[in-house]
Image (cartoon, rainbow, N blue to C red; front, top):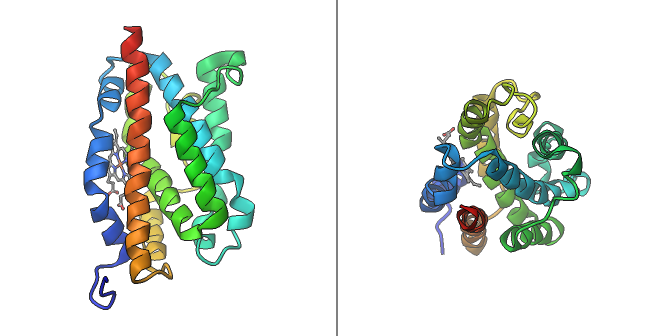
Length: 221
Ligand code: HEM
């Protein structure tokens, strides 16, 4: 069992526990091909459409989770991404974007797992929240800049609104506070390991989506 009296703060534990999975996600073939311009804007559109399912699951239970003692501090209206994703999809996909919205099997599994945590295990939900929103505020900014250049999208405008957090004026300060909230999570002992396992799963589920997107687009070329 983990000795929590000497263990590193939880924000450090979760970061190091997922370091390898983060590298795998970041260097996945799909991400690389997308961000080097190997794939076209239609791949970016398809990727964005998968995010819709992920954020729908993350944000569907926000109202209930806002008053949850564990997840409550993390659920903040300024983070909500679904409306921005819908604006991006309408811009990238045109009037039919909703009809074209279909989850890959890996996306459906990922969204189902988020929803299971949202309704049954709030510490698990926090892990999924961390994996997405803190990532969007970090590496997501690299993706935005690259997408704007590659496909000539309006800067911080339609197509990349998902990556623009208007309500977060100081991302570095926001991330610091977020990590303090992680450090204050009321979990210890065996629960820490269970939560870290869920964090590794969250990253793996992202990589699974990249793998399926990669297969879809390599099959087209
Ligand atoms: C092109 C792809 C990616 C790049 C370039 C990238 C880059 C980065 C960078 C530079 C940081 C550190 C920022 C900081 O310390 O403030 C970071 C943090 C993070 N990234 Fe990524 N990332 C990518 C993909 C992903 C993916 C796919 C996920 C998961 C869905 C993810 C989740 C995270 C998380 C949760 C953090 C915060 C780590 C922490 O401080 O605890 N990233 N990323």
